[in-house]
Image (cartoon, helix red, strand yellow):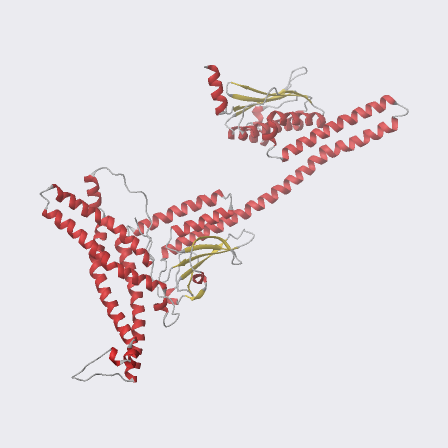
Length: 592
């Protein structure tokens, strides 16, 4: 186990004459001192018996066992002392799982070469006499305080406290009682101050001797926390979860009792750890000689009404952000504790990560709004070019049929047939638009249904003859299915825009673990050597194919003389999705 980095102690602001006496921390320190003496005596006794007994019986097998047991007790009893140090508000963080056991002698060598073993042994040796000294000091002060405060009883009932001096009974007067009361209250204040000093002394001693390599461990924890925070911010999928994780990392890698991320209006966005409410009530700013600075940014260090230390960092966003004020990061520390400059720099980095997360959320929201506007504009253009034109044609065809119904039946029938074709084409166009707007349409209808609807829309809108060979739904992953549909959509768009074709052949086939999508037209073609890797549309198709683990091939032939066939063929090959486990098991069982 290793301890957090030792905080820099700083005196809390004065909150009243009896502040030290009434502080709950003083009672915990008194309980620790009360338990330290018997615990220290027991530790010294066990280690003395183990070492002395082991040396005296070293010639026997039991001697070596006693020495090994004493060596194990140094570390085992140190863990008990760390638990007892919780009364002082000192917490220890386990660095990781213990090393694997490889034998007695490797364990002995590792234990004897570990400086933590000798620091723990020194703590065991020092604890007992130091606890005895604390007992003497506290006992003397407590006896003096109780005796002086009980002086009114001596004055009121002298027989209860008979004091004989040279064959005469001494009876205190009122001035003496008043002086003893003043002495008692003074001793009580001194007792509270001494308990406060003892708490700091035992805290420093515990951290110094029972902690591991605190500088290295603190740096390791901070680096790991910053690495996790950077990964969480880069993921950027959920702002609330990101801020909550940043608060947790800030608390775990620091000595703070609690960490909170607050919005500019003071409401809590995320928090980790618990602390009394009065600790967050600002008492006053730190004095100039106690100011805390970090290499970049500022740390506002204040004392609180509860005697704790409250550190605030601004959560700043870059100038390009819409809102520059991201709120504050607040870290609260137990009374008498204060972070060092390295920890302040770490917390400032967490605040910067929070600002980056907020900025990323703003950018994502802005991009989503812009994408929505672009999608609405695209939908308006598509509706104007397809459905609106079809509806206009239907209106004209219906009017023509009505006008010629009585005098020219054949012309009216032709107008009605034309109107029906336009209506069917409009329905297909609308289905294609609705399909493109729904991200789950591929999962519901499948690739074959999507391509069939798109082919019908091409025929109705552009007058192309599409020969669709789509026998069965291929086995593709959702990503590969989406890539296949987008590639086919782009290829058909190129046919309309560039090829000047009259016929298009669209097919999907699956064989040998691969799915092949082919789009071929009888258009004018182009020269692949002159266009290199192709236009932006071709590069987009190639990127989609590569992203799905497939390949894309584009072949085109230009008509050089009359009668020569021309056209372009786009071939997409994608790996088929693995069969479902249950289906594969059934197939295996059927074959066997």
